[in-house]
Length: 88
Picture 1 (cartoon, rainbow, N blue to C red):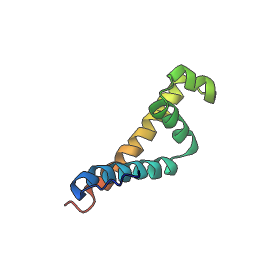
Picture 2 (picture 1 turned 30 degrees about the vertical axis):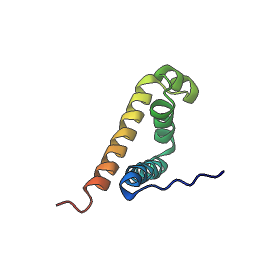
Picture 3 (picture 1 turned 90 degrees about the vertical axis):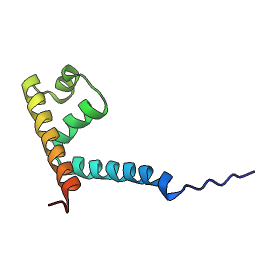
């Protein structure tokens, strides 16, 4: 037998909000410069260690940290714009 599940609007809202947040993050990450996007992906999404990122991307540790910091700052700023949109 096939079961049909229905969600109430109340139950569906958190799922829709989470999907919206994922789409926003994807858009923001796509807008980053290639190197920032790669470092952010490796460190924050795939949980690589700094040393591994240095080896993979042939970067010095300081460069990786600065690149990651800039990427995170951009993400924070873009998310703040999204969440503050329309709020005076």
